[in-house]
Image (cartoon, rainbow, N blue to C red; front, side, top):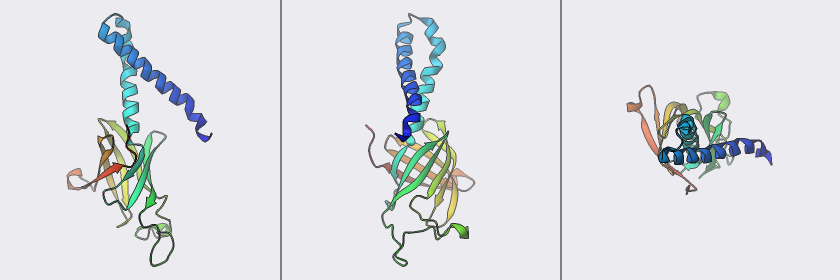
Amino acid sequence: MVLNFLWPRKAFVYTLAIFAHFLNYFETKKDKAWFKAFGFVKDWSYIFFQADKLTGIWEPGSGKARVKIEKIADKYYGKIVWLREPVDPVTNAPKVDKNNPDESMRTVPLKGYRMLKDFVFKGNGEWSDGTIYDPENGSTYSCVIKLKDDNTLDIRGYVGVKALGRTDVWKRLEAKK
């Protein structure tokens, strides 16, 4: 399997999560005070699992596309994996990024296009320091992503000041249980 290289990392993370629960048990019992020295493991495992709640397939409020968000190294990226209208009615070819200000990018298909880039988890269900590209107008905006619940995101694109931006609500396609 292609992803076999991830197995040791996942096993390590699961082990940390079990260890964190073990630590929590002893913290509540107050039996073994030396376990408190390893409390950072519990906090780290919580942050790790919360950060990856962003990954999955999401549908923007317009319903015109679906975006797969994935973690690459320490950052999060999102690419278009589905379009309601994948074929341009004028050219009868796959839709391309015709509004891109970079003329060389105007022939790139929208399906597979990376529209969310460089997001970093900041804690408390927030990812920032990234950008979002709007293929309808060819503009790139600074962006903040907030997890409202496990299946809902607030995506806020802005130029300069967050207060002057626009928020779109995205829904996860396959609900996490």
